[in-house]
Length: 234
Image 1 (cartoon, rainbow, N blue to C red):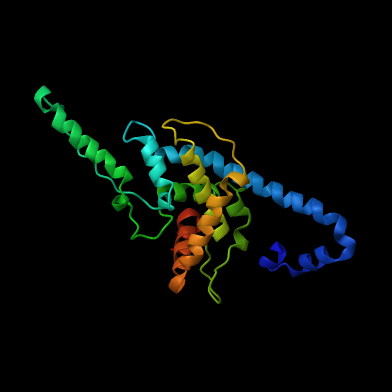
Image 2 (cartoon, one colour):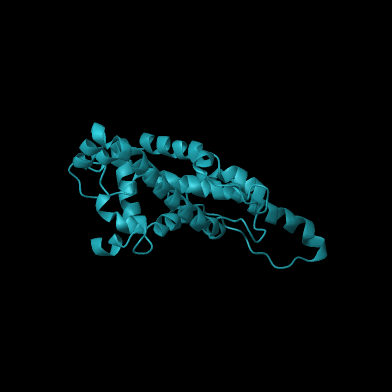
């Protein structure tokens, strides 16, 4: 049970008692509604975040090709480094060759080699910004529940962004990118069922990436990069 996960054994005992049966469903509904509220907040923030973190506007690249590329294999969680050459306006006789060169530069956005996969995952600016939205304001979940953040490593006080929080943020970014898959923005109804598959994919990815506490160090630095604790720590 969730109460066990946060070391609230007294609550666990009371909920399991036969006399408390009538309170379980209202409590479950309360928790569910809180999750929906937080998830909706992430979705609202991510709608604008993807515009600044990915080349979806300004005709920088073919948006349909880009979204089809970046949404596969969790590529969207990595930062991308693309260098577009700036050319002067060509003379009429040079238009054909310059056009070809510009097209080649734009194709870098769908080139896996431009993804900085050698760096820790989840360093894409969109992931960082969406996580920061969870620590923005005194009523935000990251601030209200600051004392519940833990380390996944025993006897270690380096608290982390929980896998569930990180996976929810990443899956929401993936969803918001999907709203641009036609080449322009098309609003899609957002709910847990729509993002469940990508959420699970993110969880599996992070479980596999835990060799030598790799996941711990990544989530530890994400916590201090996205919360005010960064300044207190240093």
